[in-house]
Length: 223
Image 1: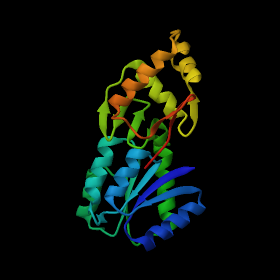
Image 2: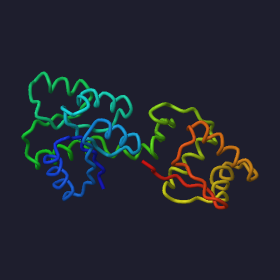
Image 3: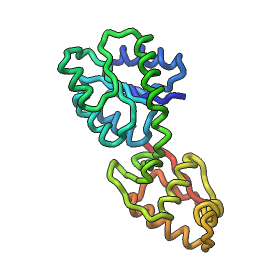
Image 4: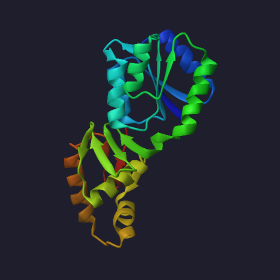
């Protein structure tokens, strides 16, 4: 399923677009403000972003620049009433991949989304996230609230394994087996406890990283 964020403060337009794309198999999340959009993006990277220019708490071009600074390959289309040539140029200069002017035909918007996805693929598969913690699988980097966090190799592997199983409780035994034994490093149970403490400290004691007493650990979204 294509996971799409639609950043639009007009509930009527948002509802029409969401219903139409939903019928096409898209999962559409509407964000009515930049604040909501930033929080949503930091928690989870979608397949695609539709972005209006005029928002109650900021301009679309500034949000597009912020998106592009974090996720260079994430497809973004402006969907806005601002159709002046200077606005269109500014939209592309801010990092947009396409620009659609209101009023628009839903079929045309759908076709342009598909055309862009054919070129970009599903960029979201590059990222794993939980609340504000994000791993870029291509670059092997970790960020927390958009700030890059430096982890050791074993801390990275531990976080990666937890994110790959987000929403599931993973036992201490399974973690030891997958993170350490797969690399030929046989350690005792205390090693996991110490590594987990260091990881939590570096990530600022995140609420989304939970201890399941006498069993193991689980990562799940809390926002």
